[in-house]
Length: 472
Image (cartoon, rainbow, N blue to C red):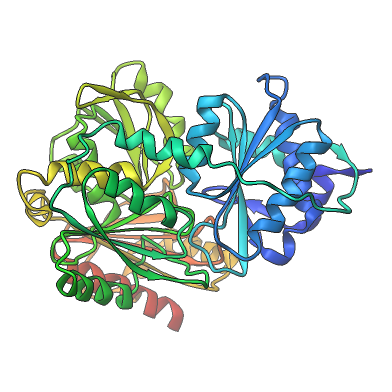
């Protein structure tokens, strides 16, 4: 017999900001089974269920990992409902409606040589406390020697589309030309039917047979250029895309300019009349200065930290939500849209913010909605293949003398007015610009976020900081 915590420890896999992540070579059949046994046994005394739902993204390694998870579920006497390739929020939504747990096999936006597992209890995404329990569980199981054939159920995909088409008139997007940058997104087969059901004309853009690691927080220059070209070539009103597992949106306005994820979240929350927000510390400060929300609380980066605040906010506010700088929107309470109730979905979602932005843009163009906000601009990028140990060492040294560190990074005579250690090192400068450094929780990367009074300056700060760190 194998023991789950021993197998997981030997694999070297840990939880990041969203799910367990590691190299594909680390996710053997027995490691996937160990995680599944640890997860299921850790919640069996809290919930009554006989099924577990499993979904995957389009990574080459995902089907076999799903088979291993399904085999482990069968060892536990559960029926494995295989939902195939679909967005993470679609799987999570069906899981919550059916009050069963689910497992999403995905590495989100990280390169294809890596993968991961996301876990959802019948009541939603697992917490940091749940992650600790999974890592330390001592569930015993037999080694995986064969993988089962899996038959796809389309129920979750259908329910996800209906969740949104039921809220709006079927001509809500009539006259709109919407481009869908499909690449290898897990939701690419759902988005065209969804937008078409609301009256839009859909143009498919650049579907890929190879996995494309789109990072909605660090959009490449190539993707920026593509969007502007597509917008003109196809006369598009809107471009929609997501990261690998379809929980982080990437949307472009009428000019083909990609919106920052936190600006998209702000406009969505405003359109929904959300009262209280939980946000990671990396989000744009325009959210506070626009004065459109009753209460805002800042958290560490990662959806579990945002979700952890929802129950607290719900004690004083009826409508509660959160979003991240990557654009993922988390609905923390049942909410009314067009006098119809949309149920809470406390996990990252890409479709809701896109649709709410399009609804808000019925009266004025998207670029105009953005221009009416306080003009604070953010930018972020990262150094890839940069060890977490090295990142921590650099930030530890920086905290001792942040002014000296800033002079080495930027060298413009500015001083550090204050620092925020909520997650990494966030330096608020004497001219109210912001430089924020933190190790990624999902991959060996050092991320840099900047906020300034112009997009050009924010970009310049990030590029200069990351270049100087590499030279150090």
